[in-house]
Length: 136
Image (tube, rainbow, N blue to C red; front, side, top):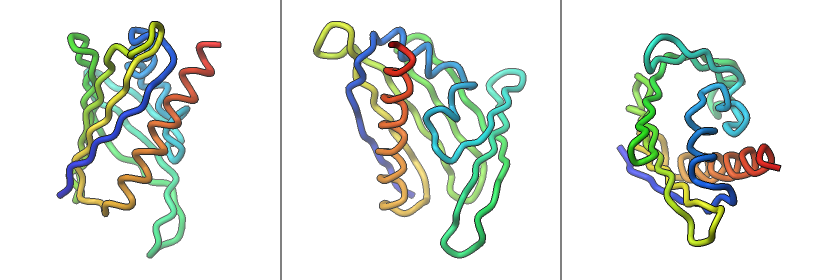
């Protein structure tokens, strides 16, 4: 199992970014392979993603997951059952400049380092683009 972490500066106020990320309906706007999200009671969600595995044909997969919003400290925790023990946490902190914030994502997964690091950078970039565009 591996532990991964990366950060990015986002040019919106921390409360705005946290509100955007706390709404699970926004997930497909910044997670490129995610095609749908259906929240259920409590922290449970059903997600569908379009994947292109190296050893199988491309396909849509649906999974149950959880997403827990922690208002105090502006963080989210999530995870999905399965062989990769996938779970993560993100934190939204004040930025160095007024009107900006720092987003840090931490992941725990059994996927390969290259897959995770590329996906993490892609997700951070997607979040930054989606929320800054929504702010305009």
